Image 1 (cartoon, rainbow, N blue to C red):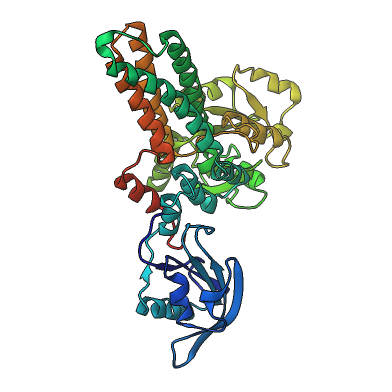
Image 2 (cartoon, one colour):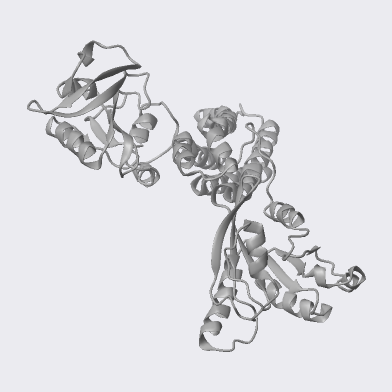
Length: 454
């Protein structure tokens, strides 16, 4: 069991609130709290119990509190943990922490409680990272992905893959002990089938990162088009609020406007841009330049054109320019309330085109469906394993390369010693994900991104 000095930190956000929670963890946490607590004798109380009393400095009471006791190993960190629920005054919180520090407690570093949970075997590294993802989740899909990882779904998959490889690696390395006798304990055909299967599994996990990235971070959606095409009106309709100024005067939008839209649990960052045309003044020129910059950074590009006034040739001219920016493109013909339905057939594009009236809100639902489709988002269940972490993705890429080297080595009949090296590379890469193979620099990087009280 990992053990070090007792640490303390507030586990609730800074600011005034009705209640705040101060957390301690360490072998002396219960004893130290008892020295500043006026109430029941905490050292005699059972685990997972709550106790009302007062925090006191010996001269005066500081605050009326409720103390929760969680004894090792049945606690979040695996150590003795105390949680003090006090009133949410920043002054009171700071005064209690100062009092505990005077008694020998150290203030916690970012993520140190979860780091101790990992070091004490309560969580593996990918589950620990999922804790941070859960805290920062801002959509239903992100929450579901984080909770699946916290429950160990992803970890279990990695451990299964790794164990299968370990079993064969042991046979390969056993052969090295009998190298002079020229024997093979590992069936090369079975090993090849296993490695090919593992490579497919790893490839599927790598492919899921595109979905995972969308779930975790959302998608940048740029709305572009010529002035007065109805871009800002479309933004307002999708958001169901008057976010952008709408005017019949071309060039009203001079700068980008960004808002977040949640569609079926996925976040889309809608970015309304200045109209694409030859700028009439210096300010509009800056706006147009920013439009192209945003287009280059977009995950999806909505090109809005005026179906009442533009020709097919003009639309194709714009599309040709925008397609060079390499963003998935959704064509939206606006102002169909001003056009005879038969006239829309002239826009016979091979690309998917949705015709709408942003003024009346007609036909907006297909745009939302198309955004979901272009984001390559599927419905996720509690059993889906989706990679959402860039560190995991990078480790999987290295594991796949090592597995492909094993397959190539088997085809070229290289020695068992070289095969063992490639298998070890794959094992190490997979082990980095769960923390079975890890160094202090990786741990520092992972936990430094946590909030202080977690």
